[in-house]
Length: 531
Image (cartoon, rainbow, N blue to C red; front, side, top):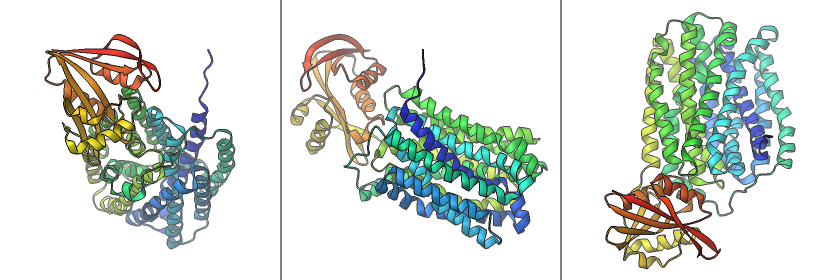
């Protein structure tokens, strides 16, 4: 039996390679930090300013980069971005002053701000919703490979050729990637294009869910920023290793753990959803990860570089298992049409966080060491989870009212798989609506057909609110507290709805040939017995 990788995953793998180069170019400075600090006579706080210069430029340009990629399209947008950041990387090898180093780091940040939004755009265009968690995980693998490659490249090149040569090599790799992508994009175009009726930019900016995700991303990625930029310095200052020894023996291990964490977070969601809503599964993985990350506070207390590296690796593992799901949430909520801008908003938030936090981290390390930094960072992901829960799980169920009929009719028209009845007739039965901050997200209609017997007449969810637990919440609201038998009909082809009903306890009780029209299709009758 042969195994074939779907073409869409080959194309996305090439995009992931660009993500790896993006992070490689960014992280070589962290791997070379002891040598660069020595040549320019920098304190930890001044090194933090270098991180901030990159992060500020990255943050300020990320929304514009996302808009540009949405407007120009994936191919042209990512090609421009890779070319400009590769030039910035090579220019780093030519600097002679601290001011020039600050300038090229800002240039690199500006150019690299398009990398993650482009990857998010590719995820939305190439992959169906069920696979997007794995797509985000593969993208995280790219980030982690870049982070792991930086200390290895520094260890083997800097000793013989100097630290400047490392930047020349990383820049050249970017220019080699561009023709590879152009050939791939022509051979494997995306199976789905961004819809023409994408949400308007003002509407998206006003959506508080976007800013809730951005705030959660700030808190969840504090530890990612810490270990991405300070691992080598931690091993050198806390355990007395040389830069070469720290990079060769230990610093490459945590990014490998981040690879595994990204896959674990994506695969866990992939297995849990099984065609149902994604957001509850994503929240569950984020909670598990946030609780595990509380152990990060113990990293400075460990007795050896080996034990400390293991703890840092575990911290990186759970950070990335959380982050892949946070970065997938905008794709579920806002769709492919605004995917680049939505993801860019999260990268903007990450950049702002690094801009503010990096000098503070440096100053705290100069004064007190790593202990207070690790302790504060360990609590941040749990606060991020609280924001995520409030942002994505803020759903209210209530009885439908006259004022809801227009929204119910709109949702019904947008759901051809649902029954198409007159909405006003629903008010004679137990009709309930799900309310989010955007308004009515879905509805369910339950009719009492006999004492102790009920029929679910209709269930529909707004296409923009699907896979967030809305349908499950609506069904549970009408099943709860009602002993008796419940029946419903569902289209034979509507496998996702069938899976939802099975998870709630419904089982197939029969079939009705030709029950549906437009198109003609049989109905599966499902039954649930409530005690």
